[in-house]
Amino acid sequence: MILIAPPSSSTPPVKRSSWMRRQIADPLLNLLKQGLSPAQLSLTVAIGVGCGLVPLLGVTTVMGSFLALRLRLNVAAMLLVAHLMSPLQLLLLIPLLQWGAKLLGNSQAAELTLDKVRYLLSHDLGAAWSLLWRAELGALLLWAAAMVPLVTGLYFGLRPVFRHVAARQKAAQ
Image (cartoon, rainbow, N blue to C red; front, side):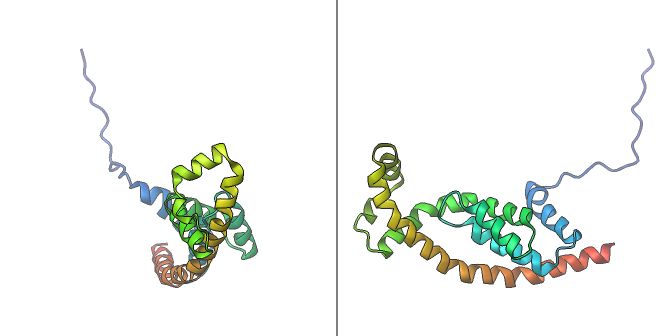
């Protein structure tokens, strides 16, 4: 019986990158290679975060696509960032609705819990509507007020980071 040794490989083993790098960082860095300027990329990420946190379920894609097209930004990148914000959006939804109800003077704001909303949606749509419309309007007002400084801060904070990354990529080529 002759044993044959496996051929020795002169190439080093492939290093596995982290999930965060593969799913988030690499796609955003690839956009820099595709001609998106650092300023455009930072605006895309900042607005994507804002769109991803809107307290109205179901409008993230429409709002992100509209703003990306209107501002001539990368739609795919904006939607990637916006949809990565979904867990935080869901986490903030009920508190924003409660604060929105208090902001607009809804006396039932204390009753606004996830269990109460589920029950009303399955048993009494009219009561759910009367409870939620003011809460949603107030939540949207709070979201709009919070997004102005958040998006502005992200834009100006990410611009130098993306400029630095673009310069490093250009030097590497």
